[in-house]
Image 1 (tube, helix red, strand yellow):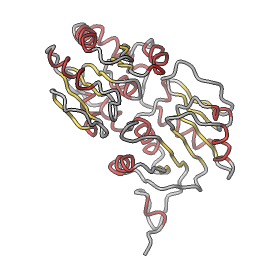
Image 2 (cartoon, rainbow, N blue to C red):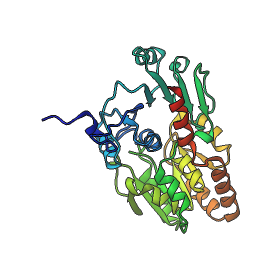
Image 3 (cartoon, rainbow, N blue to C red):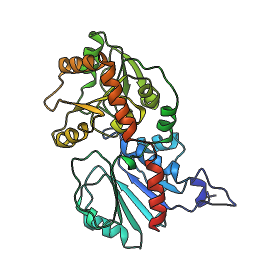
Image 4 (cartoon, rainbow, N blue to C red):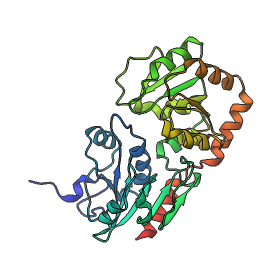
Length: 316
């Protein structure tokens, strides 16, 4: 006997099935990581279950199910939101709009912006191309999961460095950077993503599910260039953005000028000595750390998901 359609949704009941407002297609997986999916979870939380994920990657499905999110294509949803790792074309947007749906692009530099009904532009690009539809931009629209917001409200003693190079650390920087930090005497915790396949670092290790708690307890975050920098800013944790992809450099430089993170380029490989020098200098300057922390808390207030949810409801 097949399950009823509403059974895929944790908030649904036989008497009161969920009417899905937004179908979410978010990029993710062992190599790419889970930053796209994680920030879209914030929208699902804010929409009270009126969103569902269309996911095919097994690791993404496991990631979502572990957090109670529904996985089911909902072609009848009036809005489809794309958080893609690749730029979306205008043709792709028009195709999705053909049945009368509204299309929302999140963090997308593609030509599809000129056809989309709404674009959401996080403050992680140096500049954004024009868009014809509604545009939501800036730090006030940063998507943060409830777990991150709750961690910000809880007082935690801070100590040492958290090193986290994403879902899989594709540049393989974790072992060298972790070893250098530990050898320098800096208390170091390493968060390994679900796609990490490198050697286990000689440091305290936490799994990805414990990342938020470990971040909230850190004095300093060392990470790549991505959404974790915004989570750290909200939590008041200064960051070092280790940029290992050439195309990220102009965006990372612009972002770091906001004052919540410092940039360290590693496009040609690990530079552990420079990381130790920068991290040690920051940890040895409590007043500078507090200025950076205050700047982050001031920019990322944690209400971005609520603001975007209101705009999505208004779209239909």
